[in-house]
Image (cartoon, rainbow, N blue to C red; front, top):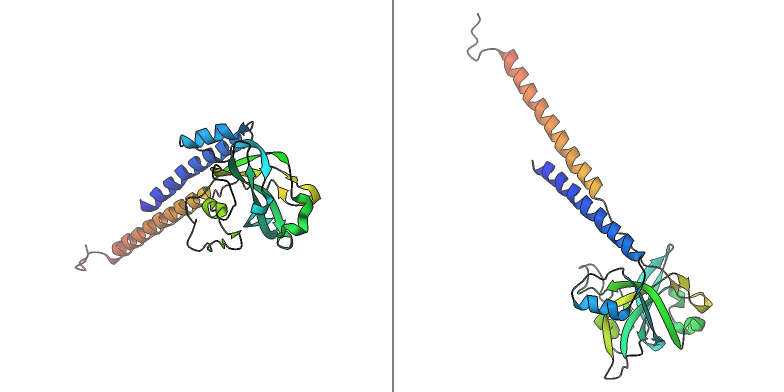
Length: 235
């Protein structure tokens, strides 16, 4: 019964995951909204993850932060750059991937966009805590991050007293910066969905256990029948 229950639970989880994936897919293909709309929905406690959003402002390239990442089989960094909006709000934008050797912005000066820009991408919520025990601690002094810590990223920025930081990130959409780096559009919008495999495993174990139990009972019954009466008497 326990194995069957675990299998049924995985089937229910499968349905939930499929519905969530469908929701994310529909959300990522919606029209982008402005930062004001997104901030208002976040303030109401609504889920804003993967919502398309558009923001206009000026990149503070001196405030780049780097999150360990991979892209097309290569290891490197995602470049997170503060975008200062005209109303003195600031949002960190994941501009995309650079390989290890191009982490230094001096090696990709063409990609350090200046002046007013409009960024369109997907909203990502900031984790409240380190996602796991085995994830390394962020190196705040070197601005190297192993998980997206908004508070840590904001630390050390030279901002005016009236600047406020929006509580989410924007992952820039596909495209390359001038000079080729960073490469945008690196957001992974897929979620692991192994629940069908787990369900088959639990149901399979339950079936094997049932068969083994039937065979054991049958074997014992056959052995008892062939042994005859316990006192050895014959008709």
